[in-house]
Length: 192
Image (cartoon, rainbow, N blue to C red; front, side, top):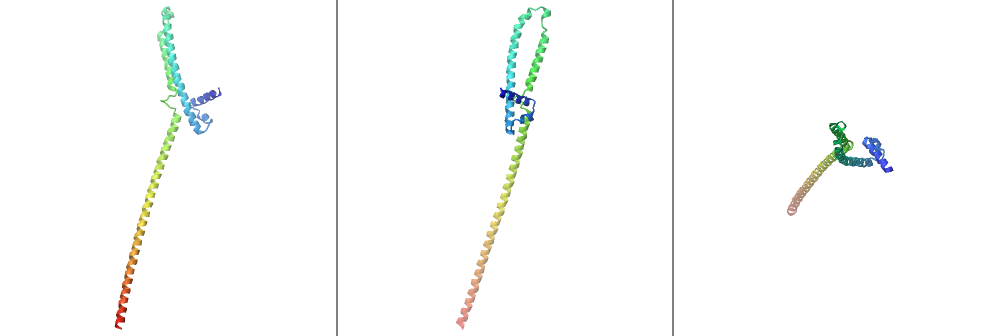
C-alpha cells in the first residue's frame, strides 16, 4: 500500500512537471532512472486507457442496439432526437481523443528529459571533438620532436665523420713530415 501511495505521489509530481520535488527523492543518477520509469508508467496507463475506451465503445454499441427496438415502439414526442445524440457522442469522442493525445506516448517523449539528453549528447560530442583535436596536436608535436631529434643525430654523425677525416689527414701529414725528416737525417749521416 505504501509503495503504491509513493508511486502515485511521484506520478502526480511527474504529471505536474514538478521536477524539484522529484529530485528531492534521490541522487541525480537515481533521478534519471526514476524519470524513465515514471515515463513508462504513464505510457502504460495511456495504453490501458485506450483498451478501456475500446471496451467502453463495444458496451455502448450493444446498449444502442438493445435500445433501438424499444425506441421504435415509443410515440413520436417521446423519441430522442438522433442528431442531438450523435453530436453529444461526437463531442465525447473528441474529448476522449484530445485526452489521449495529451497523454504521453512512445511517439511523443516528454520534452524535459529529451532536452536534457540532447544537451548531454551535444556536450559529450563537443568534449570528444576537443579531445580528438588535443590528441592530434600532441601527435603533431611528437612528430616535430622526432624530426628535431633525427636532424640532431644526423648533424652529430656528420660532425664526428668530419673530425675523423681531420684526424686522418693530420696523421697522414705528420707521417709524411717524419718520413722527410728521416730521409734528411739518412742523407746527412751517409755524407758525413
